[in-house]
Image 1 (tube, rainbow, N blue to C red):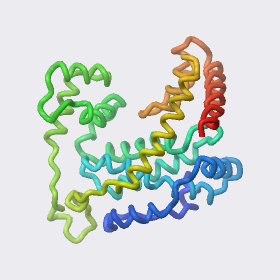
Image 2: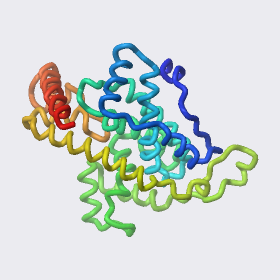
Image 3: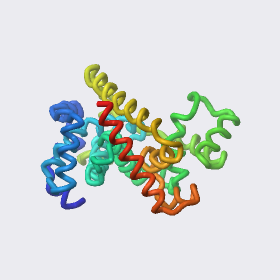
Image 4: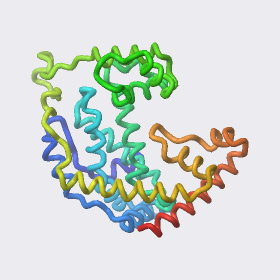
Length: 288
């Protein structure tokens, strides 16, 4: 990973940069077709072609910026969120297998979000206590699961606690901390003369332009529709294995975990997964 990072030259983004300028810069890199992506990924996997890896990364930088924008509410520098997301993207490219029949955009989302989550947990003072997987899941999902901005009703607390596998008291505590977390719009006086990045600097609307939003929706629709259709052609057990291994937002299950679930060996789960992925690849190629 370190060799790959050092060998690639990517657009730099620092706190002093204009996010609008950076956004314009990454839009200059074209979105790859399925055939181009497959060819480049195969070159990198088979020949360790770093130029091919660089093209794959550059074509997905706008995806990183889009995901990073979803985490601005935590009061951390947007530039840092994007840089951490870029690290996740590079990890995804390194592990991406084009022969599995899944597009890089779908595979990379988990790695990008994982790196951003880790950065937030390390740097946002309120979440130093979020050390378990369940607590982190609660921290990152509570806002979207609440039905409104008011204090939650006990039934709602119970529902969220059950869905996220945490105690109701933990839900209430996290809600209290989220509501009580205040962020100064301006930089602290102590920061004068030093590099800083206060929330006031990124309150402008950095949303996608209408053409880019349409393009992103079209790409996501094609990928989602094709993947959903391919999954429906699998038997129930094969579909469960693929979804548990590759399509979970918070990381996939291991072969041994699924082996315990189905009461078979890990090798048998690997065979089921391999056969299912081959079938999906054929179906996805036919749908293009």
